[in-house]
Image (cartoon, rainbow, N blue to C red; front, side):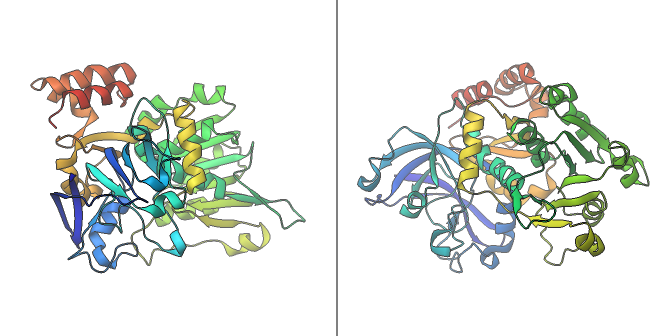
Length: 419
């Protein structure tokens, strides 16, 4: 079967190509991809090429498919897996396979599996590690958002607290405690708010900071203070760019009480240091943001590490249990992280979008690999709709959902786009 796929040949050398996939073996699965959201990790992989830890050395002659936040339908199942998987099933994939201790992962390391493609061959190790995850939903993009949402679930699970006088780590944020999300209204921050308000272990107070008024207003219109209160959470949005003393500003909202859990959502030295300064006794600081600078550092108060039992964790991705958790939550309508999506595109726009990702404002770029479509911001639908009936239809649809992407919008897009 022929596939179209974006493949990595070297540093900043991405190519959209059509080629023949090999026939599947008895222990492999042929699958169709419908959607793939682009992660900053893919940008880093194309920037570093073979220097990336997950990318093989021989990509110049054996290029790899990129993309790891994908979902679609199973097309054909090898005999080894026929009792577990069926043609027509929707699926998502946990890319962090951890197969025999290897860093190899779909979207970085394989010739025939990656999200930026129309069809792929899923190798046996994906199934062996329990990383092929069937799910049922009325939208494919749910499966593409499962991987980034699993990173959020993993981070929340990784925080821990220790009851004084014991050495037992109680995993997870402090239930009923005070939590801060710093630089928290970017795409992953919005997902964090959604998950925090709807998971089974909530803080009593959630303070979300940023320095961009427009982004804060958008977040507050999607995840409202009133809805949070219904969940038992006092939600506060704070613009820390309006003061010379952000620490006092943040603590004013908590009656000068420090925080139990702080998540740092941007690799910015002052933001990390803010997180350290608002942390309370037995507080856990989670450095969630992934820096590209290998020498990135910030000052931490080690007096408080010793006497106030401050602790620091960092998470990079979620595990398979996290993926299963968020897939279930999304399929059941418990969380609905559509606020992460700010752009859509087709397979023909993946190369340039990936190469220029840091320069493109907004959140997740959701790419539909079975169609051709220029990368387009949801905010631009109305203007484009003046001359293009496709975008006129999409604009009318998302107007009903607070200008957010939706299953109805996806269905309309796939039915009316150029294949």
